[in-house]
Image (cartoon, rainbow, N blue to C red; front, top):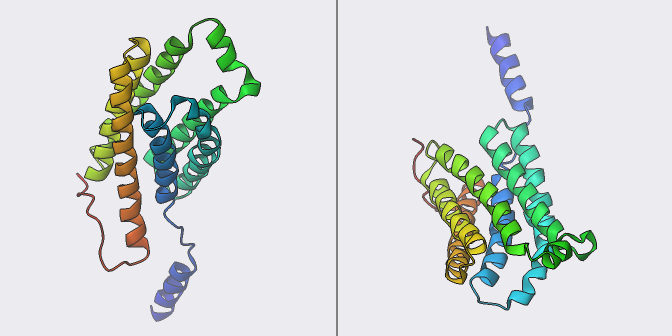
Amino acid sequence: MAQLAAETDRAASAAPVFANPSPLGLCGFAMSTFVLSSINAGWFPAGGTNIIVGLAFFYGGIAQLITGALEFRVGNTFGVTAFTSYGAFWLALAFIFIPGTGILDALTKGAAVDQALGLFLLAWTIFTGMLLLCTFRLNNALIITFALLFVTLILLTYGYLGSSTGAHTLGGYLGVATAIAAWYTALSMLLSAVNFPFTLPVGPRS
């Protein structure tokens, strides 16, 4: 029995320990959302939208795709779906604004930019609503983050499809709040990971 216990202990100690990839994905999502939402809120000139391309491609996009792959490794189905999907969202959005693709130019010539972006965001609004339902089995911090994102996308979708400047601007403000909520959630995980003297409450699992 002693030998069996010793072998079990050695097996446990030899088992690989994986880092929590979620803070990386949350930070990539938060930073990209914060920058674009600041422009949508009217805090910076709308002509500066192209500054989001590099950030969305590398941090919002690729970093979240990597996070999704790592979440697969640790068996987190929700994390795989959310981070991989939103990584693809930022890559797709960045691709639209890259001049060489010709997508934005084609839409502009056809005067269909707002309607096309509205349809694009509508699809993501529906998807985000699905994930929001799942967060009610996770914690309060994620519920707040996804609820804010859901309402943000609703407002931006209406802003584009309904040509409502007010809804678009309000969506920008809520997008900033979404980014702050995502950063808060990421920070709570990071503080726990480094055994900080205090942690940030995220609410209990259901």
